[in-house]
Amino acid sequence: MLAYVIKRVLAIAASLLVASVLVFAIVQVLPGDVAQMILGRDATPESLAALRRDLGLDQPLPQRYGDWIAGVLRGDFGRAISIPGFPVGALIADRAANSLALAALASLLIVPLAIGLGTLAGLRPNGLFDRIVSVGSMITISLPEFASAIFLIILFAKVFPILPSMSILNARIGLGAQLHLLILPALTLSLISTGYVLRMVRASVIEVATSEQVKVATLTGVSPGRILFQYVLRNALAPAVTIIAMNMGWLIGGLVVVETVFAYPGLGSLLLHAVTQRDVPLIQGAALCSVGAYLVMNLIADLIYLGLNPQLRPA
Amino acid sequence: MGGASVTDVSARPPARVPILLRIAQARGGTAGLILIGFWLTVFLLSLAWTPHDPFAFSLTQKLVAPSADFWLGTDRYGRDVLSRIMAGCREVMLISAGGTALALALGLIVGVTAGFYGRLYDEGMMRLMDILMAFPSLLLALLVVGVLGPGYFNVILVVGAVFAPRIARVARGAVLEVRQKEFVEAALARGDSAGNVMLVEILPNIVGPLGVEVGVRFAYAIFLSASLGFLGLGVQPPSPDWGLMVNEGRELVDVAPWISLAPACAIATLVVGVNLLSEACRRIWAGEA
Image 1 (cartoon, one colour):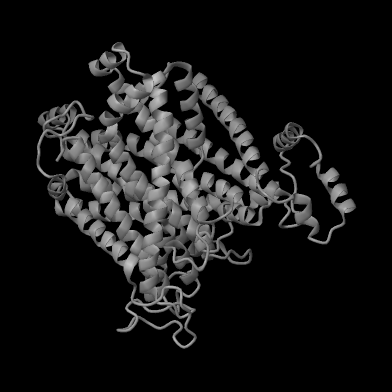
Image 2 (spheres, rainbow over the protein chains, first blue to last red):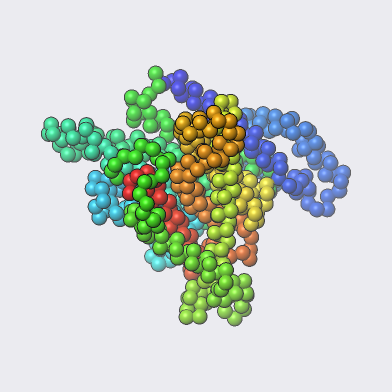
């Protein structure tokens, strides 16, 4: 098991290395000159050349990549251009914490909702409840986050004005108020994944409920409640976790949109800001961190999956 | 579900029932056909006619609520929302279809050759696809749009680039299955060129699984291009792109909710329709319906 974890961590390191080359390469193709962007249009050629030398832009590409990656390994992501002087690392850490809070709250909604609804639907396939849940999940997985955000905002901030339609954080407000601000974005973020996970849970509940194992247990007089928890739920959880892991990509992509809709200061909106402002160091840092977060979350989900399925554990 | 098992998914369904009828009989198929039929009608209609000019500003008729004159109201520049939805349908359809077609072309080239030639080439290509898929798709799209800049054709390019690896994966898997069949061996034995074998013998036999994947990707293409539009990285104003319309209506949601509600509903119904349809097709190919 330990060997497996080490192998996976090494694989993540390798993937990150390749991703960093890819991100670096993509960003290098960005049109526009960084020095020109910092100094503005009326900079003299001399000052431009001096700044390029300072930033290391006169170095060959492999050298610049090496310098950047060496800095990243020391925790130094360079300085942002669009927010002059700010270290990229501090900006990312600050925003990533906000995004993490949002993603965590969304996951807290996804897991019980999907498992609860999926199990109830799967216990009586094609019943009324199952049909309602099927239609509902088909709609939630089809809605882009910005569209579902509009529906939720109109419903919960306009028709029933109980939640704020913007989530602009303010250091002075308390934890309760912050949570209040997070509800709508977290709900928006959770809809798509809830739909996918729910379908997966439903399918595996149906499969397990009709399996030989459960039939035998029923015949030998095991109580229905015990069957539900011991066999059905336990077996249905494993695929659900896998789908949650696969949905982390969605969650990270979704963060960009959801944070933009609600003006929430997270990593996603930072990345969008970086791309629209063509802030090269910020794009590189934020993109690399997002990919890293994605890979690590996948690993965590895999480990939970293996924890629930001891028979699949590598020797 | 779980009816007669059809082992060979790539084989054509034997029944000669018209495909539309079969789709209508599958679960959710009728709803899918109705939704897609509706939007295809709107698409065709929008080519010839819209109730008002979707681009014409009107100083006297800003933010008009839905009424007999403007069924879906007007936006902050006095443009008719219904006309813009109709014109936007054109853009959404063309961009998504273009992006999916590009992804299909790229994915087929990589996937079919990888499955056909195998060995190191296959290994290398699939690792490359894995790396591309390690990026969350919106993130990859953000980076690519950052390089190319926003715009109509760039969105098509982005959608094509982001979804090509996924289609390549499916195509390769299907090719590996067909590759073992006698008719492929026979064609190779009688000296047909590799290109010919791929085009004539293999391609027609992977249409089933590929068709379903293309349907799914088309839904995601609508999703992705609209999300890019919403983020301001897709088609630029004054285009009536649905994502962009939602964005423009976002800050006015308190005073004029119809501006963003109408395009949000449009996207929802179109994507639900495509998803229902491809789900129904998947069931038919898998022999479940």
